[in-house]
Image (tube, each protein chain N blue to C red):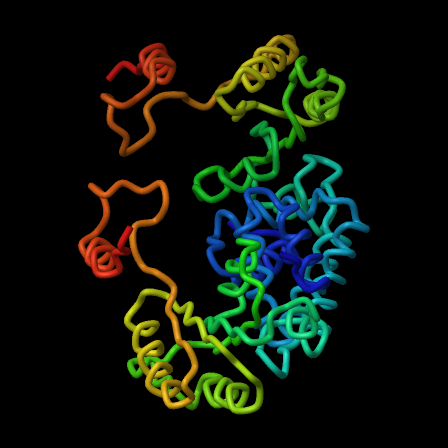
Length: 198
Length: 198
């Protein structure tokens, strides 16, 4: 079975995207062919526009079309708290809670010796620079509960302790709506360790 | 939570695609921002190229960048058999079996009174035209086993009977690798009805 050539190329490009397999890529490509021509042109332009206008904020390394980013330049944000995350997607997830009003620092990765990623390969020195320059009262570590996340949290805690700043870590435990019966051992262990006196 | 504007637009466009929800759209958009710039440009160009160069074959209404399409213009295809399908994606599915060597006719829809789609809204008269013009020995109906598919098959059978051509329908029954125990009643009924003498 051979697709007509431009269709084959389109399917190939969709398939390069994460979580898009051959079947989904084919469905998306066929859908594009049924879209009005101006919609397809707009889609193509939006792709190029996003890629060319969005880069990293010089302060927190969030992805943004402005520099400093919308969060760093927002005067109503509490500039004395920094929430440290691994990737922009984690920042987005926290922003969606509509609860956090401080700043961020996107590490752009986690320490992972297996993958050859050391402390110098992620934005740790830039975080240190912010801590020395600005008046920071608290740093919240919001890294994934994985080996790499824990290693990075540990490293950052050691590094930041001398600055006499409050350092906290988001809670690990049972997710809301889950059932204790089905929780894995590690989660239950973390939930017990992190128990709060009522 | 507000995305930086070009990112918001990109997410919006990804979300217009079928089976792409807000979470996947965000993941795809963030992935695009991490792709090399020339890759993004190529993706945009491929989108436009596919849309502008692919249209419908004048004979069978398959999507193609050539007219007649690759299948209709292929001399090694058996031109006396037409397999009738609803959409290009069904044609692709049959082509992938590498077994069928005849031609196709893409109806571009199915009769569906509920949705206001009657026989004149799909490519039925064009199929009739082919039957009167060319020497056709068999028409295979390969439409979905749904209400609309069955209605369309019935309509086509009545319409084509007078031409004294062999008309067949693909078999409905248990899918390979499935278990009889878990098959729904309709499938079992169709499997019983369509039983073959050994």
